[in-house]
Image (cartoon, rainbow, N blue to C red):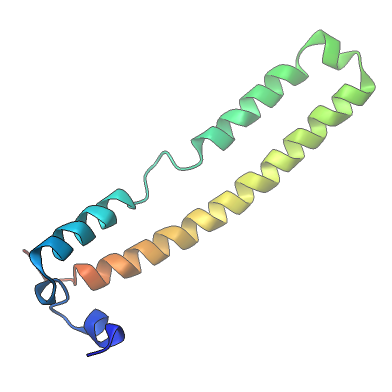
Length: 106
């Protein structure tokens, strides 16, 4: 039986050895998307805003321009992260659906 056939089997977990089953469940649990993904990046915007509000930055046009550049770059990163998070959650749910098929209440 190929791995593709095993993944398609409705009793995927039943085909595994107990140690393999436990390891797979722990790995799946550890990879579950959380609400904290990307919080560091959103906090970085607060740092940029705080720095931009400083008098020494306001009085230096080059530094003001650099802060604006940082803010724009951070926004681009946040947009990319949001898209990646959505893709990650979709993939996670697909994998979870293979391991725990709907209707399987074990």
